[in-house]
Length: 202
Image 1 (spheres, helix red, strand yellow):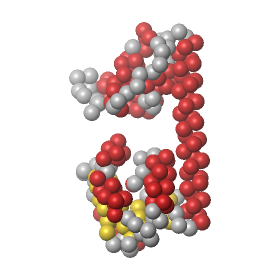
Image 2: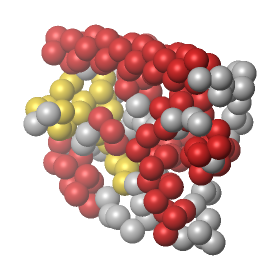
Image 3: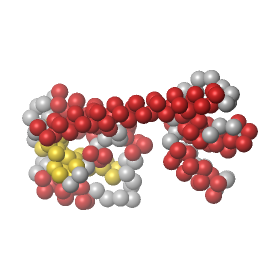
Image 4: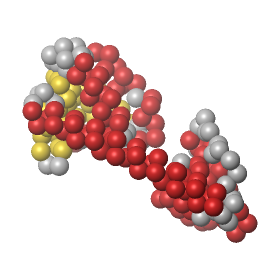
């Protein structure tokens, strides 16, 4: 059985293009959902797909980011499929079709594993450097908070960002301590500045 999975990141987008591509490839059943990358932990249709596939089946997606929220997530899902004897086909991976049942596809998994490990090392290194720099200036107040929800980390990052003149923290310090990226922090700060009375966090 050849299954397709199509996803767009907002309810205003349509799935037609992906469905057409998946159908043209030969997908006999296509699971569809509209979810942003931040909501990928609640992929009911994707979970249903994983619960359906069995040995010898194939899962097809138009692009890798349609079914994975990160490199590590892609690897984990590929491993799950491989254990079940299920192949993954990505219709557009740098302009090429990639099938994990082939030698090239298996090489892709190895490359992705290396990238995931490299990304994790970079994150740890940045956190260590940021905390060390804050400690050197005497502005680090112990272990960073542990957040039970992502928006709490964002809120704390914005608080620290707004108080930079008094807490003497750099943007790198704040990002390292709250695990919020520079791009996200600056974007939210701009939104807050433009809409001081409007909510920026969900």
